[in-house]
Each structure stands twice: as C-alpha cells, then as structure tokens.
Image (cartoon, protein in one colour):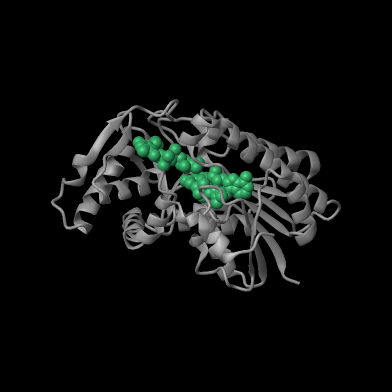
Length: 351
Ligand code: NAD
Ligand code: DAU
C-alpha cells in the first residue's frame, strides 16, 4: 500500500513546487493535493505532473469541517503538509476575516481531522505546518530571528499565521499529535501570483507601467529561491524532529529599492533597452500600514541538524526567475485576464 500524503494549497506558488518535488521524487507515495482554487490557486502550475499515477487533485475548502472530516476518512492519510493559506499581507489589511477563517479555522479543522484519524496510532504519522518568518515581527538594523524569538505579529496575515502556529504546538502538547513546523523568509521563483513584489515589477516593466515602492523602499526582506524552500520542506518532513520548529532563510537581505533597481537593470538588458530605462518607472507610493521594517532569518538549526542550506546563489536564481516570467507570458496573461480559473473546469470533474 502506498503511503498517502495530503498536501494542502498545492495549486499555489510554493505548494506547486512542493507537489511537483514529491510526485516526481516519491513514486511510492500517493500525493493528494487539496486546494480551494481561490484567486491564488492555479492548476496550470502543475500541468506537467497532473497525469502522473501517484497524483490526485481534490478541490475543496479547509474551512469546511464536514468536507475535511470526510476526506480524512476516505483517504486515511499517513502525513499532512499544510501550506494552504491566505498569504498576501496587503489583502489581510483590507479583509482580515478571510485570513482568520482560512489560516486559523482551516488549520484547526485539519488538526482535528488528523487527531481523530490517528487516534491510538500516531507512530510514523506527521502533521507538518508550513509558516512564515512574519510571526516574529519586525527587526531593527541588527539581529536575526531564531526559533526562540518571541512572537510579535503586526499584520492580520502574520497574526493569523502566528495563531495557527500556536494551535499546532498546542495539539502537540495536549494531544501528542506528531507535528513539525517551519518558518520561512520571502520566496521568489516561478509561478508566484503577480500581485507580489517580484512578478508585479517584472510585469509592470514589460508594460512600461509605474513600479510602486511602498514608503521609502528601505524595508528589508531575506529572499530565498522557492525550489530551495521545497527541498527544505522535503527534509523537514522526512527528518525533522517531532515537536520542533525549523527556521528557513536565504541569508540574502535586500532593501526593496535595491532589489527593484537590480531587477530593472536585468530587465533592461533582457529587453535590449538602455540601462536606466526601467528605473525611470520607479514610483514611491503610500507605505503599507504597519509595514514591518526588516526580516532576517538565522537558519543555523536546520543547517546543523539536517544539513540543509540554500543550493542556488541569488544571482543565478534571480536571473532564472526573470527568464521564467519572460518566457511564460501566456501563464501571466491568463492570470491577468482571469482565464486561469477556467482551467479546472476543463481538466477536472467536481467531486
Ligand atoms: P499562495 O497564496 O500562492 O497559495 C496559497 C494556496 O492555498 C492557493 O493555491 C489557494 O487556492 C489555497 N487556499 C487558500 N485558501 C484555501 C482554503 N480555505 N482551502 C483550501 N485551499 C486554500 O501562497 P504561497 O506564497 O504559496 O504560500 C504557501 C504557504 O507558505 C502559506 O502558508 C504561507 O503562509 C507560507 N509562506 C509563504 C512565503 C512566501 O514568500 N510566499 C514565505 C514563508 C511562508
Ligand atoms: O516573509 C515571508 C512572507 O513574504 C510570506 O509569509 C508572505 O506570504 C509573502 O507574501 C511575503 O510577504 P511580503 O509582504 O514580504 O511580500 P510582498 O511581495 O507583498 O512584498 C515584499 C516587500 O515589497 C514588502 O516590504 C512590501 C513591498 N512592496 C510590495 C508590493 C506588492 C512594495 O514596495 N510594493 C508593492 O507593490
């Protein structure tokens, strides 16, 4: 019997890279991708693997308790990798409730279903909760987040993720649910929804539109290539110690303005424009409310315990990412026109 692994949020940015890695690397697993296909979920991200025999897609919402319970009863999962979430900070500022519902209630539904299914037989089971460095709050000019940094979330998004992290740990202590967690820094790479900074800037440069920089552009993020995050997730799922948390980061800090300027210069070369053309599009706009100043991750625990570290140099990963967006204009166009939402209807029957 193949092990059955549930991956939630597998049609999203990071989830699609994790699903692809698991489907290709572990033919002995049955991978079940559960995704509600919100605006951020796009099955086109998985076109290359969706006919593989060890892959099943299920459309469904983690906030629907009856549905989640039934799904766990039907598949009897051996493990869960939980990535489904509302993930965009700006959207959480305009609509916090959607974040509370999916990120907190949805996570508790999955925890309860796993607890019931695995009652009395927790051996070899694992519930892996994928989270963010934003739960730790905002850093000044020095220091890095470690796994013991006190939580200090500042946006509805990060508060909802912090809450879900606490609940996952509570299920470990209270019910002995075999959990593991990770908190990662900003990811970049192919298939990121084009309202996040990097794909948004690439698309706006292509269309000679303004590049909106919040505030002074001096906020700092630590950028990690998404495929390196997926590899870290693979290692933590298989080798991470139960009850533990692992920080994941790129050791790669950039101010937003320096990152966007670098992107502009690379784009000028790719588009055969004079260097400086794209930078002229930079436009400073009103700052994000409660904008965290700096994130930086101390990833020494995962490196020491599991031997993981980023495999791709930023220069290489960044250029590869830009090339992907330039080569996959159809993917972007279908998102911008809304056509990507029809893909599911053409490919799958409703359960
Ligand atoms: P994303 O927004 O691209 O994808 C989220 C996916 O979850 C989508 O496919 C969406 O359809 C699905 N989803 C949303 N609500 C759902 C619901 N109620 N039921 C079922 N599916 C639902 O997000 P992402 O950037 O890929 O992030 C994935 C996870 O990683 C999130 O938990 C996020 O907090 C975490 N994370 C992201 C980053 C980053 O830089 N993007 C960094 C660290 C951690
Ligand atoms: O740190 C991990 C987090 O990284 C994840 O938990 C989130 O899910 C993910 O979306 C990301 O959050 P950020 O808010 O850092 O990502 P975003 O791409 O929205 O913004 C990156 C930085 O760029 C941030 O400081 C805000 C700024 N920004 C963003 C946009 C969209 C701009 O200056 N202009 C913009 O138009």
